[in-house]
Amino acid sequence: MIAVLKHNTSDEQLKNLTDWLSAQGLGVHISRGNYQTVIGLIGDTAHVDEELLASLEMVDSVKRVTDPFKSANRKFHPEDSKIEVGNAAFGAGNFAVIAGPCSVESEEQVIAIAKAVKAAGATLLRGGAFKPRTSPYDFQGLKAEGIELLLKAKKETGLPIVTEIMNANHLPLFEDVDCIQVGARNMQNFELLKELGQTRKPILLKRGLANTIKEMLMSVEYIMAGGNENVILCERGIRTFDSAYTRNTLDLGAVAVLHELTHLPVVVDPSHATGASKYVKPMAMAAVAGGADGLMIEVHNDPAKALCDGAQSLTPEQFANTMTAVNAVRNAILDIE
Image 1 (cartoon, rainbow, N blue to C red):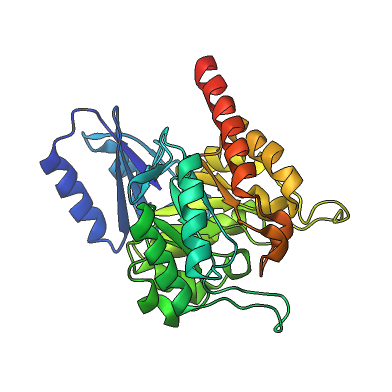
Image 2 (tube, helix red, strand yellow):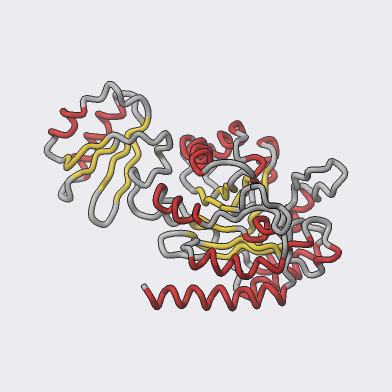
């Protein structure tokens, strides 16, 4: 249920109303916009007297929300959210690019890539320290050492770092990480999501390999229900029947749908979606044209020798070229707007 308040509602009136609603055992989410304030009621609202609430002088209208996701719902928060990660920001007109290697392999490697992607326009550094791999014999990442190397790269370049968590027990290692990534395989690891809801760090949540948009938003709800509203969504392609030429099918339509359903920013990862470096640039351009709030792109200084996902990684030179194209698309869109 949501209650839209009249424009002249005072802070005292708002507090009295929220105290009354909270006393009924409801969670209260307040969204202050430029033109209106929306109160979202979370929990069992069946016992709430809708007519009484609507009759209050300060209330303009009351609506019931049937969607199972509440905190992430645009009806609860009509204006776009801006999620800040260090000196970068996503959403509400802000655009950011996350770039770096699939796996952190050495200090020399990650620092060299960090410097290269920053020079080309990236605003955040990604790098895998813990790597979920299909085969137990594949490289699993440098783990805690990998995070330390990312922090060294951050010190050298100033880029905020994004890296993936696989287990809630590892959270102490992520204390200095700027943005925690939840990978596709862990999108419905609900116990992990609950723990991340207790933090206030930005969370980059990737869509699962075969999950619906609704399921993705319900996973977001697990994080936000814990009090952490700093969530960035990531479309990284879904598994379909055609895998002969691309690893996954990049669902760019999801960007538009998510922007309609939720106030949270949406990032696109064309690297994992296509699995082939030659398709990353056109899909990155298409994602920007489709309204994405950011990109996540894999970059390696020697893809042929990469320990993980070299086939989809761009060289620093290819990344710089891609950024030029992406910026051209962004500028064209701004001119139209």
